[in-house]
Image 1 (tube, one colour):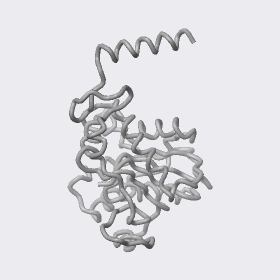
Image 2: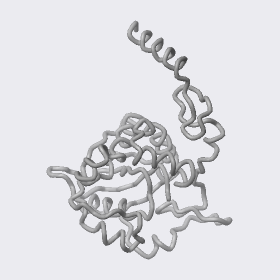
Image 3: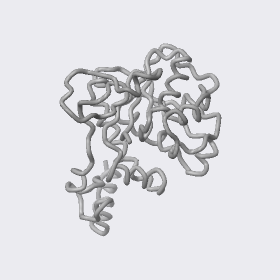
Image 4: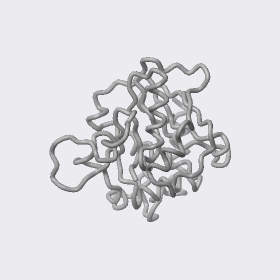
Length: 242
């Protein structure tokens, strides 16, 4: 109790000397926050109507459930991929700073967005046995210094009490996906993942975690490997969708 009180006093002193400010605009904010209220409103949530498989949002007044043309014309191995926010503007900037700018403290904000996706009706009533982060190739992880999906999965595990296990590994150092179209991404990723040695996913309900869904090719290939290994179901969750 005394140690906790000392920690609270130290935290209060640090906040007094260095008041927290908004990551985007620099305005003063509340402790344990990362964005001011004004910037927070610029983060756009994904809402219906949307593709039930990949969460691609659509304009209009569609009321029935549907799968988009991209999902309807390819084999989808994940049961659903749920994203909380559009990966534009502030959301894109925050994730970019976290992922490439080594602003690792921003993982807490991105994980908060990720946790919002769990409230989606496609996931809300689901029970998961394990959280599995999308892996980086060891070379790329050494270059970056961390795996962003791994950090997010660990935080999500702590919030949900679902165990986090790195059951997948990346076996090929693939070229960056940024400039590739959907078919090129699928070809680039084919057989780029495998289950780790002695990893057992048979009959497990898996929650696959990554930071951003772009075309869904990475998540789909990971889900294919997990399903081939005997996973009962694979749902994916990301903080944002490009």
